[in-house]
Length: 294
Image (cartoon, rainbow, N blue to C red; front, side):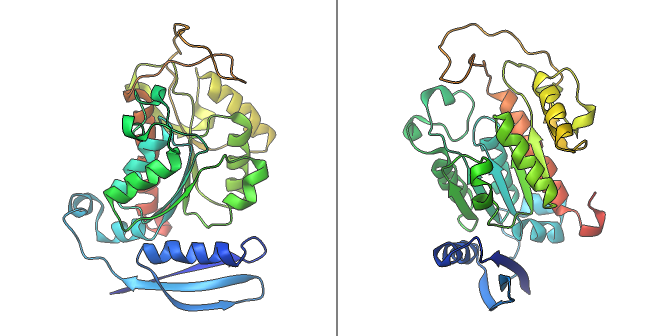
């Protein structure tokens, strides 16, 4: 069975090299160009590929989600912004679930202090860019996944470069409020589904995390700040993963980096649980038939 999809590329944003890179990403995912042309505004490409037969790698997933849902995952592109304790586990789960294309964004490198909670952090990866490490890990899980690794920070100044690609879903695992708000506001304006992780530092009980609308959050200082900032941007409803567990006061065992007042404590199961809940939300939403999506 031949599967097809159409992508539109904004030529006012993409130069020839960027367009070639985008097409190469699709080719790595097994898509071949069937038809291409300029419609006066965008470069429009129709891709096709043979439908993927059920494999030993995907059979357990297909047993629960079904063949049609798995096909929708394989044709989806998800962006994960922030590849720390939350985002690295979210990206891993998306890859294992069968998402066909991932954009992985993080400007940071792996440090020794990441070893207690980030799945990209190993002694062998210390000093390497998190985006590149996660890209290699994703390809080790499934070499057919198209991965666009970007070792950069998302912010207003880089917004258009990030949104030069079409996304089916965005996982927001960014720490900085200003960057987080800009990403959410832009995704909402462009009609791209997005779910955000809120604070996970200084918490111990992973069972307290929940998926909900931001208007339903309570007991989380980060959620309170985000509610205020999003209201100012005209956004009152937004999907989040948060925990109402009161934050502990950590022992001050290390000096905070420039620009931060303190260093939060962390435990491996807390941010990982938040990241897996983000992946759950994204995968189940993408698996739903279009008419069933909220």
